[in-house]
Length: 107
Image 1 (tube, rainbow, N blue to C red):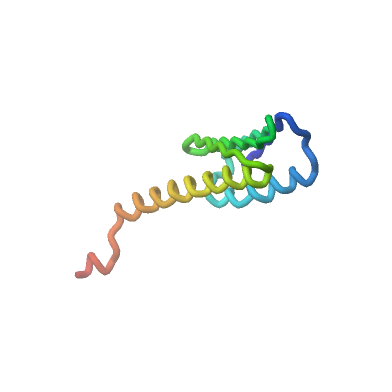
Image 2: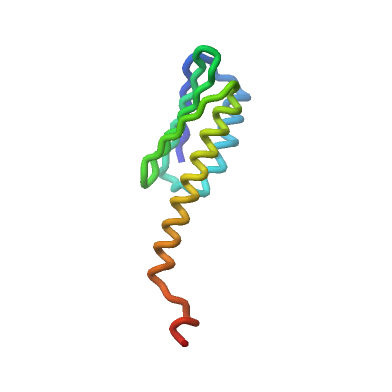
């Protein structure tokens, strides 16, 4: 999984890099190793904007705004987490509909 972070209107610092890497790591369970995540963090007119784009089997894009970096990034990450969980649930449901349990076949 590749993670690329772009900053607009603010400078990268080690604590920001560590924070983003830690939070993005939680998305790894829902993504393939070939997935890429692009995070664009901007600061304009006193508002932080975070745009997270995920390229997996499907393309996802999530945008959030907040008064601080934590708020905007976490809101976008939670949107991504919900969407990826829902997609995984749909895939599991599709797989489970194809197979019948042995109890159903024995009855």
